[in-house]
Image 1 (cartoon, protein in one colour):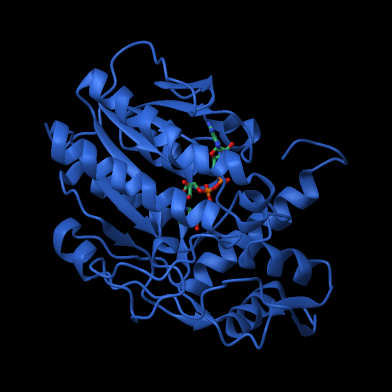
Image 2: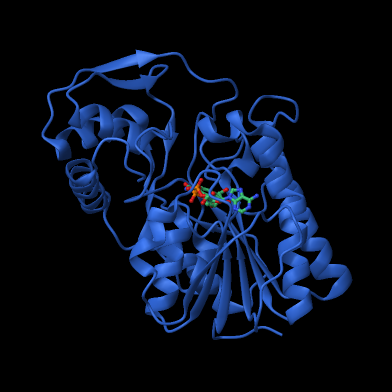
Length: 324
Ligand code: NAD
């Protein structure tokens, strides 16, 4: 049964970048939260500030094994998966398993408790898109055997499995296709554009943009992303629903913006493009606006300022070798 309230939520991947913000927003909204994570790409440090909050608990567990969560469960957010290209290329089989077995276990946990499942899918299901902007009705252009397929196809399978549970078993589900999100708690070395550019700009190193830098992305501040996930959880909508910023810009322009916010003089230099790197990315967000009443609110320069401020603070606070 769909619910307007989140109740007691399980967040798999809750100690990751998006998951930790989701846990925090859910607690702010009065939900209880069980953060389930195996710390493969996340960190206990990401949720340490939540440890003393009423209703918050952490369970160290691998989502590719059956999930046993004591007590009631009303909503399962399934985020557990490597997400940055650097991580999923390092963990190819684990990434496929997080999308396949991990999604199955999240759906089984929800079924056991009569809970709603929200799947964190991705704009990568559109691959290197032939339609622009990407509407949910577009089926995508994914190379099934390329290096990125471990992530893209895992998420496509996760969506198919979620829909199968919904159609054949009446499961209450919602699928969010998240477009590139950025903000505090991204790892400076995770290889994604925003943290890489910030790290390089703050270190006065060259900012490396792949190819001619004209490939586009639409980056969304993480607070907006998690508001979208929560709106989807509350809505009872199945989706899939695009959650992302419709503000598209080239990677070169993004590098220039980051450099400006950092007050850096770093040169912007070209490096090789990764295989199957999408040329364009921009969500059609009309469904999210219509069905969820959601749209991103944080302007890009403001989001970048908050993110850079966090990088500066954590860099200053981190002792050598400290777990961040
Ligand atoms: P992240 O790597 O920071 O977080 C993923 C978390 O999942 C980590 O804490 C990791 O330890 C955990 N995890 C991985 N495998 C696990 C397993 N088998 N069992 C338990 N925990 C496991 O990545 P993120 O950017 O926070 O992404 C979170 C989710 O959102 C992912 O599912 C990702 O595909 C999706 N998503 C993110 C973006 C983005 O821009 N950040 C875009 C599209 C989709």
